[in-house]
Length: 242
Image 1 (cartoon, rainbow, N blue to C red):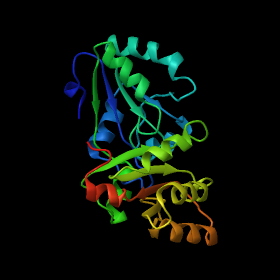
Image 2 (image 1 turned 90 degrees about the vertical axis):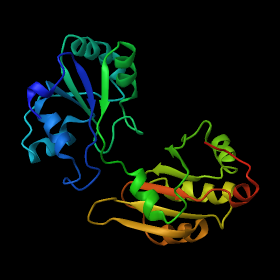
Image 3 (image 1 turned 90 degrees about the horizontal axis):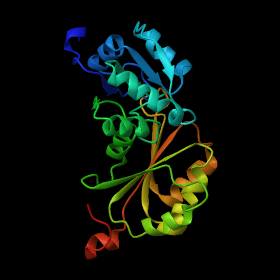
């Protein structure tokens, strides 16, 4: 992509970045990152490794959950003045359990064109390799850590679609144990970690079997937990629908 391919007016490009293997990035994403005026990065130190690997010299600015409310208005004004801006997170697609929603929302409210490039996200590979039904599913991301957690789990107990969750290694056992409590110990599930990295692993079985496995094997890396929907609700046709 050369500079002439950019539109005359400013634009926000939401650019997915690799979740592990640095080769999991599109040619177009690299071109956008090279040709844009500046890059908004969740952590400039983390993204610096990616940019150095692909010889991208575009200026980066920090844009994360702690400063996005303060910086979004200024960024919108720069884009309205003609700047071509790329938004990236530490890994994966921005705004999916990462910062990004606010700046996208504000740009749209200001009449600015926003384009999201296709690319890496952890949820879809984990869902596919889980072996669980994936024709209909719901993405829950990270559950509330405290307030509202039990309420949400009670609601999801009747969900008949396959459910996808993100979780840290420090809370995997706690979350699996709560799943067993609210969804039933024999509910089938999978736990994928380190997707696209050297030690990628997916463990499949009942929730009880997963709990036993991670009790005996210390959880490491970021996790995607995929849980089968309520089979009784599927058979009766009741429960949540899209």
